Image (cartoon, rainbow, N blue to C red):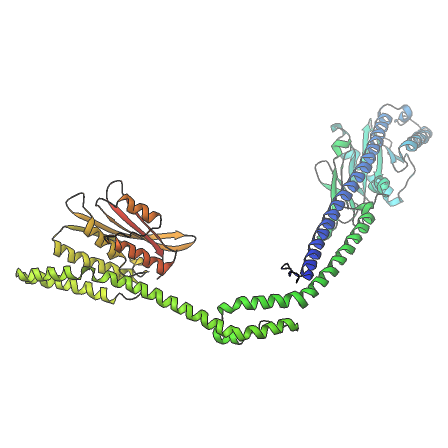
Length: 563
């Protein structure tokens, strides 16, 4: 007994599909892990930097406070400066200066030798450096000039604080107090203040900015990165108010900092995995081109056969592959294509002819409905000698029948159908001598819309035959308006009367999509119209009947708007 063949996909297709679906999540996982690692390394680097800056700010704040206190105490309370008075001697001044330098030297031991101190006594015009100079002589002269200018121009009654000052092209922090004509100054360069931060890795384009408490930058250690590079650098703000400092530090640093090598190593692992995925993808692509694509082309060409003509089908190659099996199938299919296409066209044409015959039959079924009544009326008028009425009736009737017998097309302009309906009403008013109030409220822009012939007359004729008006006259109105459905344009035609309305079972059947077929043949006109609409539009139309609460009935037809 032969083994049953498997109907599942080929093994190669399954393997390729599994390989592809395995590679995709691997790449996604590595991207997610790399992104998370980048975020975590950045966070750790920022945290490390924040801890270092916090320690630095705390130490610097203590030193600045200590120096400020030392300067204040020395100039206000320390008797070491008492010899600087107008009745003193030069030797006393020299000894007092030496004592001041010793006092400052002791202070520098605890606060740092980078802080320079200067003393100025205006009454004796004495300016001395109270600490070892770390600047050249030209800068020293500029410092001296600034101290003297500040003494003469600055009001010291508003309080004291460390202020930025540019002297000789360098930025310094400057603290000065004047008391009883004696000015004591402490000065330190920004570069010396930044020295403890020199070991922090900020990156090749990292920089530190000093900003005043109102946000103005007065010093920047390096040029900030520009272009895309600036997005790779963090900007961290350390407020001076929070640390008790007279300035705010703004630090731009490499996102990864000291952890960059770790991330680089992990990124290389990711690149290796990505390279492996690309190799796998290349293998999948090569297999796809050599095996799967020819099969897909074969299948696609098969699906195109329905849209090709006989000549195109006969010349169609289902595959251009070098696979022998597919070429054999191609030759066998080409021998069958022509016959299959011919049979398909014959069946389609037969169905089309059948539909045209059914439409024509339904139209012809409508035409004879009114013939005999019109001829009988004309005969009666002639018998009574009313020749003018008979002549007028004959004119209306000829126009009516001329249109009726020429309505063999599937569609006619709405204006022609309206004119035909009005001719019918003229005939009825002469034949029945009834008072019929007719109105047509349709804009001229709708008159070129194409509708099936004899569509309106069916329902108007139904009103004349069956409607029992509530008042003295029968009222008939026809309206037309736009209707939009699924972004497509339709025209809505509504035919109303003031009769007794439709029976509920008729409305129910129409709502349920049923035909109004009875043994007596009543409502055959409505049924034929619905069938015609079905044949011409398929399901792309709406038709329903309704009764008004104030009396009367309405027929609503919605069909695609075709000019």
